[in-house]
Amino acid sequence: MQGRDKLCAKLTSTFLRKWWFVIVASIMLLLLGIIIAIFFSAWVRLFIDHELVLRPGSQTFGWWAKPPVTPMMKIYVYNVTNADEFLNNGSKPVLDELGPYVYRETWEKVNIKFNENGTLSFNQRKTYVFDDASSSGSEDDVVVVPNIPMLSATSQSKHAARFLRLAMASIMDILKIKPFVEVSVGQLLWGYEDPLLKLAKDVIPKEQKLPYEEFGLLYGKNGTSKDTINMFTGATDITKYGLVDSFNGIDHLAHYTAEACSRIDGSDGSIFPPHITKNTTLHIFDKDICRLLPLRFEKEVTRKGDIKGYRFTPPNDVFADPDTNPDNRCFCPSGPPCAPSGLNNISFCQYDSPVMLSFPHFYLADENLRTALEGVSPPDPEKHKFYVDIQPEMGTALAAKARVQINLAVSQVIDIKQVANFPDIVFPIIWFEDGIDDLPDEVAKLLRFGTNVPPIAKAILSYGLIAVGLLLLLISVTCLIRSSHRQSTLHLEGSNYLASVNNKSQENGKAANGKKGEVNNGYEMGSAPNRR
Image 1: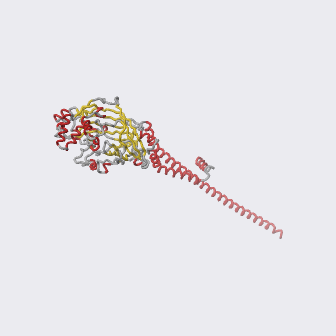
Image 2: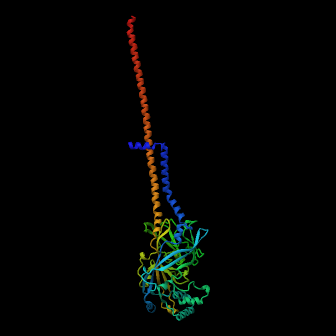
């Protein structure tokens, strides 16, 4: 009781002179706590949106232009071990998977130019350096693989006039071109001189020539790309942050007629629009994929530094045939027939070469594609799934594994003797894994601060202010009631005292009057005999 009285006495000190001041202050604290609880997350989002915008000199721009990461690309090559038996006896192809052949990458955006419409344009520079220590082989390893330039030419001639096919067979016979070539891993990836390409260079008109002089699966990719990408900075619309606006001056893919398939407004895979939810469908655009690749939420993950993220991966029917996934019908403009389920036909972007993409080991593809070959083990989602881990509030990629397999769809052409015994088959050439495992410590610490601190600050500020406000309000009201009760008691006691005083006065007055009367009576009684 004494402690409460002392606290109440403090609240009525010269610092807090009146009870209404304490009550108003407590109500203001309550309202401030409620406002923070309601609007704090929105304020944090506004701050994030402002800081994410790509602008010259900002930290975000610096990390985007020259990412402080070291991506790694691991390449696995399918070596054909029975090429002669396959061609002569019709045996099932036997493949031996070699690798990984590991390359360290450096990424940088160059020729950056900001535009007035909230976009910027740039060229991508990627450099690859072979990592001998991390590899399971050398770039000098010799492999036997399908002759892609030759088999592409024969497949394209399947519906041409017969005399053209016979002429092609004669040319290939003269040049001693065979359906399989023996090259080193380095040549297969970065380029080697092919007799057909050399002949095309000398014969085909200049305006129809291919943009490369050698053949390699990654030819021309080690260095600065000639492709110019125009991308939204987020300055005018944060929901388009990091999305492609145009590619080499075009805003859609011309070889698809439907808008749903010709769109290119996806991310390059490094940054995504912020405030991602589990219901968000993300898209990645890469010219080599020849379409937008959708990504959907799979699960929550925890990455380096205890950073919480969402894992996004392509849906299981992303490359399904149109009968299974009707949304893919517009990706087959010249069909049916369309590509088998699980394959993405990119021939439209590869000068009509019958190149098809899939996930490694034909993951999510028709099982018959894999069983038509020997040496390709069943797919393992942990090793062969394509995924991106993203911090949802900032849209930053925490880790990524882009896993893709390059295949060649070979057609039998009777009039060309070199492939007359070649069945219609999809030959896997290589598969690769490109990406990063984790972000560097500097970036991870900043992301951890930006993701973990705001919720804690919100809880402390909102609950703390509400608790202090409630406590002050409770104490002030309690003390006010006690003070009012004390004043009422004092007033009542004062009234009772005055009433008792008045009563005593009246009683004393009556007593005095009684005594006076007795004296007077006595005097009168005593004086009576004298008068007699």
